[in-house]
Every structure is written in structure tokens, then in C-alpha cells.
Image (cartoon, rainbow, N blue to C red; front, side, top):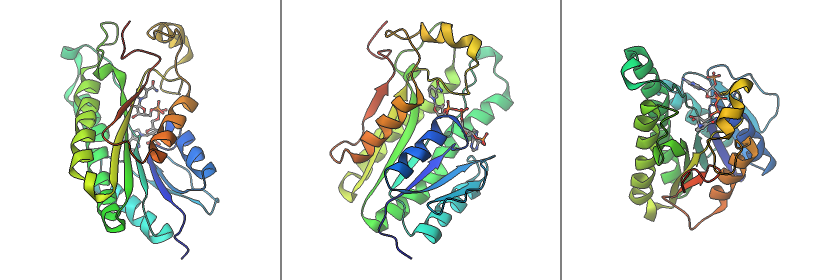
Length: 236
Ligand SMILES: NC(=O)c1ccc[n+]([C@@H]2O[C@H](COP(=O)([O-])OP(=O)(O)OC[C@H]3O[C@@H](n4cnc5c(N)ncnc54)[C@H](OP(=O)(O)O)[C@@H]3O)[C@@H](O)[C@H]2O)c1
């Protein structure tokens, strides 16, 4: 097996930001393992897809096992799979709470453990979380404590892991997004959502792909929460 080319793993890769991250890494010459519950098989020899719920420990194992078996290494993991359920704090159901924790936190934890184990053996690697700017600037118009609990946890874990692995060649970063024009948001909400940004517009998926690819090549950057949010974290 020729395993000299870099390998990226992207979660939540069937649509939206994840699907474009897959294209971005392929264009950069990486081989890619892409995963989500409904992702379709690929006939591109540089791309393998794995179906499964990322909250299940077993999915993370199949994804990382596939990367190692097919491509021999794991250089980058993008923890992009995530769900967003905005609601008033007292209205969240136990099922919603469990679902958000499973996807956003378990979905980060299990696969990252296995990816970092593989990266440790290689002596290099990069893990990127996809987070939200709402953690830094809560918004009275978008009550979303479950995003704060889970993505806030990812931001904290990003710094913790960056320090834990700093001397072992593994970098850990996050991108904190404003509101991005993806299938997550129906068109009738776009005007309201654009107005939540100091720059007066929603972000585009390409803005996020650029940021993740920048972090991937930025060898002196670790523990960074890179805001890609049209100015939201700076103020309103
Ligand atoms: N769009 C925004 O405005 C925005 C803002 C801040 C942060 N973010 C974050 O950016 C990331 C991507 O968002 P997006 O807008 O591209 O979302 P999206 O269009 O809704 O896509 C979400 C992706 O995650 C996958 N997914 C959801 N639940 C999953 C599960 N239990 N197991 C495995 N895969 C699962 C979905 O695929 P399947 O349905 O096939 O599983 C899909 O590929 C998320 O972490 C989100 O929280 C987005």
C-alpha cells in the first residue's frame, strides 16, 4: 500500500460543510474517509465512506480502522458532525438533550481517542472541532443552551488536548462559526440570520473550508479557536 499521501477523516460529511470539506481535502491531494449516517458510497479511489451514527463508539472504530486499512494513516480528523436545536431552556425534552450530547460530545470523544492513538504512533496529526461563536456571545434571539453545553465543551477540550499533546506532534484546533448558509437553515430564515452578523450577511461554506485548510497547514498554531463569524465574537 502506498501510504505516503496524507489522510483526512471528516465526520458529518454527507452534506453541508462536511461534504465541502471532503472536496477541499481531496483537491489538496489528501485521501479522505468520510462518515455520516446516510453518506453514499464513492467510486473515487481516494475517498472511502463509512455509514454510522457518530455518537456510537463502534462507528468511530470502524472509521479509523477503515482509514488505517485502506490508506495506512490518519493525519487530520475534522469533528464536523453536529446538530443544533435552539429552544428555551425549560422546553428541551430529555430526548433532545440526549441526542445533542450524543452527537456533539460522544461523536467527538470516541473517534478522537482512536484518531489520536493512530497519530501518536505516527508522531504527527491534527484534530479540528467545528464549533460556534454563540459560545462566546450568547444571543437573546437564539436561545441555545445545548449548543453552549456541547460546543463549549469542545472549545475547552480543544485547548486541553492541544496542551496534552503539544510535545507529541499533534495539534488541536477549532473553528467557531457564525451562521453559515447550509441545509441546516431554511431560506425563509436567511434575512433574520444575516442580520445577526456585524458584516450583515451569513457565512458561506467556502469560508469554513478555507479556515480548516489554513489551520491544517499552520504548523505553529495549536489550541486556537479560530472565529469565522462575520465579526460576531468581537461585538455587535
Ligand atoms: N450551519 C451553521 O450555521 C453552523 C453554525 C455553527 C456551527 N455549525 C456546526 O457546523 C457543523 C456542520 O454543520 P452544517 O451546517 O454543515 O450541518 P448540516 O448541513 O445539518 O450537516 C450535518 C452533518 O452531520 C451529520 N450528522 C448529524 N447527526 C449525525 C449523527 N448522529 N451521526 C453521524 N452524522 C451525523 C449529517 O449527516 P447524516 O444525516 O447523514 O448523519 C450531516 O452530514 C455542525 O457541527 C454544526 O453544529 C454550523
